[in-house]
Length: 395
Image 1 (cartoon, rainbow, N blue to C red):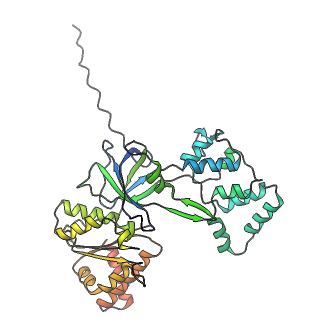
Image 2 (image 1 turned 90 degrees about the horizontal axis):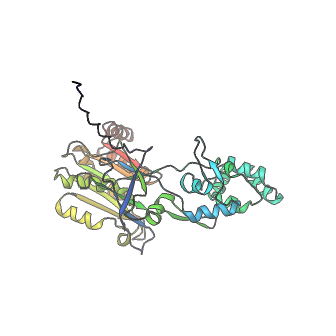
Image 3 (image 1 turned 180 degrees about the horizontal axis):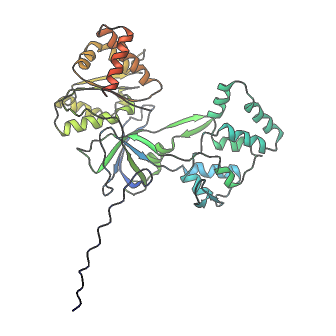
């Protein structure tokens, strides 16, 4: 008698691993403005549903978001260059064929033309006046002025100001930079929200060269991405930034504006797990009335004792400007005592000015209240960094 071995069940196919190269199509389930319309800033709270993705995150991580360009901007660029948008192109370094319109929408940055491209436009223009203008830009001995001219223009400006230059669709995209994902500090804690990720994002709108501009990803999330549809490609980016492993360790957090995002995550985590460590937050923005992000939550944390100290700085609410680093100096003696008791010191936000000013204030406080020379204070800060007690998430 022929024996037949039982058929073994096929192993279950593992869920796809979502990462930067294979982002998860998430959906936005909440989009809530945090700032008042009375203020100059538009800051929005987002909730991104990651259920079913297998994605996990830690406090301090970031969410990577792949965005799309505004279709209105794409159509304007096509028109200015004399393209229909249906031209077939091959994406550089791949064999992928697509239409020019789709490539400009999904794949490329429409701002920041490089000097190399301006040289190419100069070589292509047939109008003598246009060629003369571009030659003056390219030969300008003032590098700062040349850079300012470039920085004030996007590809649409070049196309409209120098219309006699013409390119094939393939040539055109080969002079563009690829769209890269935007990383946003996560503003929620997995202990409270394991199936969703919350973000705190300032919507970027500005004007250069007499034309209104917008941040691609911030406006994609705030205006163009639909609610409750899986059309937002995301991935989790792990960070070397996070709360102390010892829950009893004090934390000093400096996060003005959207820099509050990871510290909201830290506080949610400690609240969810009822930890005993002390928490001190320095927060600020332009106006208390319009820009106090998460005011109700922070007030509740103060009442519950989750927040031990909340120091705020409103730069435009009085004749002279007050910033978070000013509040640090005012409380320098207390801040020094916290550091001496083992506190971790965190900074999140603007790298160009705020983070530098906060770092200078920290050095000054340590020198003054620790009775150290500037050199000794610098060594103290260096040791804080080495011990991972001074961490920065700046951009």
